[in-house]
Length: 59
Image 1 (tube, rainbow, N blue to C red):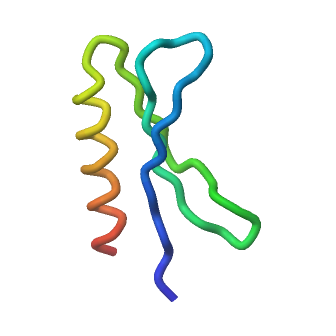
Image 2: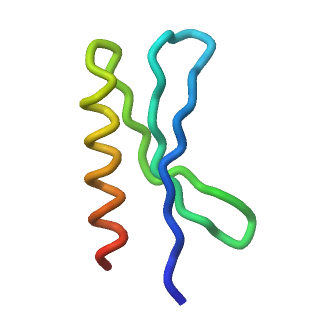
Image 3: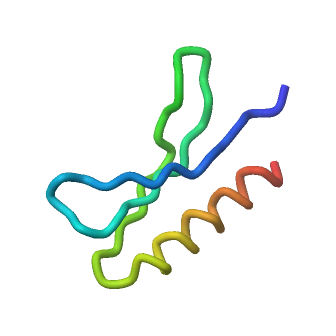
């Protein structure tokens, strides 16, 4: 069975810019694989998260 991955955008109360979490679905719920946050360039954080998601989906 293939693992399911997703990108979840969240905003922490301490930050204005969103952080992006790459998550994997387990039997007990979604688990963070890696969190990407860049306060100065939110597009960079999104691209890095998408790149990791693509690599994980190739396997």
